Image 1 (tube, one colour):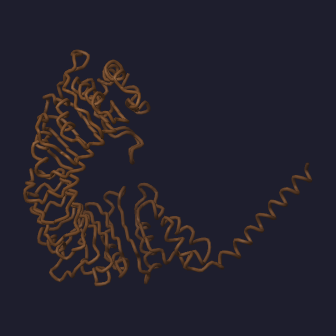
Image 2 (cartoon, rainbow, N blue to C red):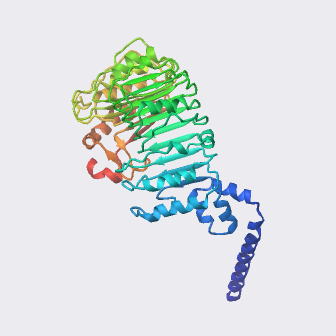
Length: 482
């Protein structure tokens, strides 16, 4: 056995040695353009590590077209900030000098308060060369507001740049700014830019397809010209000073308006071609106004905060609507109960509806419990032939929620999935959440909701429908539920 073991080990060592010799002889034989292509497909950190293995890898690494700098890709440990971070970026950019980059991304996420503005001019000068397609500068608020150098947008850069995303900086396009012929996506977040500058930038970006403005508090009006014929998506979040929104873009089909601090007038926006709308509104306004001004909507998301007004029954229809999401939050100032059963008005008005999601936060609301008032309302039958998936988050013992659910079960003949989630908030494991972030008042009602589902819902679920009942996470909230 000893001889066999030694013989086996010797054979394994021989095989390993042979394999390593084969690898050493084969790696230099591959053309450099193949290694360059392999490196371009690898994550940046892996590509940089591979450069330590051979000169062939090193040469191809120095031609890597996508440079993404954050605390993870350059090997910084959490909360370890300092000059080493900047020196690594500077050294990598020096080694890539003369190389036409495709993408340059600097992301200070997770490094709040870390000021690297003194290095940015040299980094951008090294990165912004003809052929660049994507530029992301994700900064944080510092004492010194960094001004993005529009002077670096040379002819070659303007002709290739497709995606520009800026955060926490100043942007002042001058009259000398020439056309950005390839720019299709523009994202500005916490950017100091006035309407005159944005107007100049838009008028020189005729290929623009997507525009996003987040908390750009120096923009008081936004007028999209008809020359932006390719623009199909406009997202505005948190721009509270914005009072006037006009759009003559003929193909704008997706519009998001959230936290804008006032009620914008849709009559100044071409709406007949609108297919997707995300907005803050009462369900009453959405039900009464939208069918006539946006008759071709396919996706509608309503965010209603502190506006507790029931949906009215009306003859108008959403003939094309396929996906409906209603998010209702009472905030801290409203105690009046919302009649969730009134949302039947939306269902009856949407003959093409396929998915329906209702997010409910009943914090501070007075509601009628199913256990105290077990008699449920009914309406005349109205068969829904396309509704396949329904999800209600924040499902409680509120009687009108049970009435709405029973109505769906009795009338949605094509229903396949029904999810009743007794938890409201982000669950652990979703995105970057490591623990559940709930509304505390919800846990007091969970047992009543579960008991009501067993009594009034489960016996009405057809065999063709998959019912899923979700309780609060046992890992994060088992003590609170008990």
